[in-house]
Amino acid sequence: MEKIHGKAWVAKGYVMSFDMILQRFWTAPVDPAENAKWVMAGVDEDFNRENGFKDRCYAFIVAGHNFAGGGKSIEHCITGLMGAGIQAVFATSFARLQFRNAINYGLPFITCRDMNLHCETGDELEYDPATGTIRNLTRGTIYESVPQAPFVAEVAAAGGLMNFIRQRIADGTVDTLR
Amino acid sequence: MGMTITEKIMASNSGRERVVPGELVWADIHTVMTMDYLGKQTFRAFESLGADGLFDKDRIICVSDHLVPPPTPEFATLLNEWREVVHRYDIPHFYDLGRQGIAHQLMVEQGHVLPGRISIGTDSHANTYGAVGAVGNAVGVSDAAVAMATGRLWFRVPESVRFHITGTWQPWVMAKDLSLHIMGMMHWNGHLIYKTLEFGGPAVEALGMTGRMTLCNMTVDLGAKNGIVAPDAVTEAYLRGRTTDAWSPLVSDPDAQYDAVYEVDVTDLGPTLSRPDKLDDTAPVETLAGTPFNKAFVGTCTNGRTEDFAIMASILRGRKVRRGVNLVCIPASTDVYLECLREGHVEALVAAGAAFETSSCGPCAGIHTGVAGDGDVILSAGNRNMKGRMGSRNAQIYLTSPAVVAASCVTGVITDPRSDDWK
Image (cartoon, rainbow over all chains, first blue to last red; front, side, top):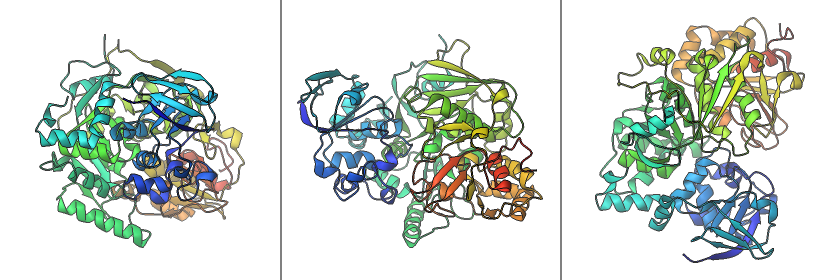
């Protein structure tokens, strides 16, 4: 797995799922390109225009507790971030519905405690998926993240849960999942 | 070493003798619920998997609850498309307009969830199912599609946290007050994320199914994976006549391991509210008493049951909702509505000046039947109060119990139902 470089957006408060995708888009089709146009529109007034978040070309989000909380099960939060170019989210903790959706879509949601307190928006980060190490190249700091479960990598390698299951339905092994 | 009730359910539904927290299992799903808002997407995702068919169409529960009756042409069209999909799959358990209700109420009330089994739904408050000793879990569209095709879904076995609730409930204090009290006690700081919250102790055993459903319902808003109450005589009596399926009463072992145990004595617990915008910013009613508001709402999967309207009727019978306050009441299901009619609660509340709407999620989802406008201050017995939840982002929502809503509707300001202010 190759290291990922890019710019980070650092959340200053709670980032809630219903602000990531505004209500008028909740019944829209799940489509990364479309969902990315208005993703994060309710999180920050600067993002509240078409491609407002995407155009800033962030590769990472750094956040505190309960990232993507608020209890929405909509998958647009994840596909919107992916469509906007986000390659990993580092947070102290994640809300479980979107944590689950992120695993199912293969977007790394990486638990890394309090990193948000020591980074600023615009910092250049380097994430090594093989070791879980995150380097803040702007500040010269290093963070060790919580390792992901092997299943998470397996689903990501398959291209997400839907593909993971599709392959097993196609080859007749889906019943062996326990 | 013993197991908790949720660990036992995860083990017995995945062909294992035992499981430990953190373990990943593929578990059998008893029922999958999906509804008008996301149901079409769910079936479309299912179709893309290439499965031979649904794993069991009797165990796919379809509900129209967010969009009935449809408030806009767009939602009417979405509802039509949803109905077309459900009819095409010939789903026997389809609760549509006329026999509708909020999905989570119907899942429990119509016997679609069983103690010791796992049920999932494409709506966050599926945690409600824990009231009968089931694991109820909210999932996304992909997860529901996978379960519809295979009858299974992956789970990470959660750590368990026990809330041991003791003492005697004060008059007019409800399970909702305990939910909000715990919200204020625990906050959204990660303590409860992914965990199973097990509610037990004498003050929980004293609750009927209504209170247990409220408690489990709001565990999703605490960030938990699920909430659960061990099945007992109350559960047995409730389920009798609602299901003929066999079930086994799994309960936690005395030596089960908990991540944490919290004790709460309800003897001193009073009515509790969440201040606008943040669920965990809670306050006892005394602190907020006297705050004016102009809209009130009681309904939802959290507090739309017969006992909720009964306590309101006992306050508002023979009294009037104060001029300038709009009170909207929405029963959580058609059966609840009928029960409230038979018991006289609807008549008492309508005579007092409440507006009754047919069963739906209503303004809790910000869709219809009384949404919030700019400047509104709303007293709601629902479950969420973030900006824009009920409509305008320029409205303020206080969350509380049906008893506080009713007493406050008499006076026009937030009022302690234990006081004489509304009498």
